[in-house]
Length: 120
Length: 115
Figure 1: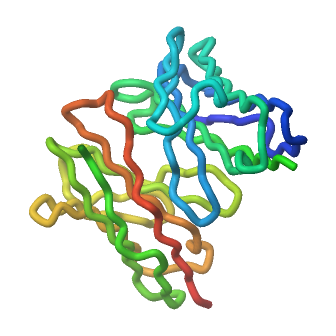
Figure 2: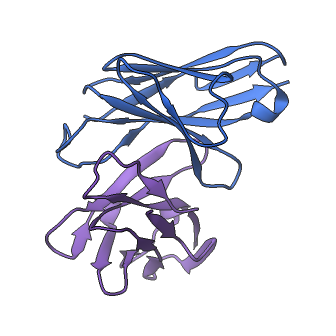
């Protein structure tokens, strides 16, 4: 149990294009999903908190118009990097929170495998 | 506001020796504490957590961690290291009194197990 998938796992795009990354909780419902960005040999930087049916909450310094987040259902959140530039190249990781008590009793978030974005 | 410190960027341990990865935390109330492991180009995998109860918590792959309230520490340990334990380890904290608070991650400690 507690599987979170991300698609695609890798994407290479040209500068100026938009890229959509999907995050799905496969065997549980997640009222809250989180999007992180990880630079090489660095820790996770929380970008935004996504709640189903409402607007995402962005961390300070994260451009909400550039990183569009949609949490359309209890099992799916998407991150769209709009007008991508080389500096947006990074490893993007999502996580899903099954809620109080946890679907699996661990009271923690479950992470997707990550998406490596390379912008040329 | 909560915070997590992992004082070591890298830890080197010989295979078969015990390992410790250090973590200290700061939180206004009582903490939820977590350890995650990340292998290259992969997402994070949950190892173990402390919520309440016994201070010694056992988790996946033979890892354990000890919650020490007086020292505000939650060090990760394993009695006998394996080469396959080489990875990036993250300690994380969440304020138990405000469960809606996000999980805060430490900067990570890279563990190298030497054959």
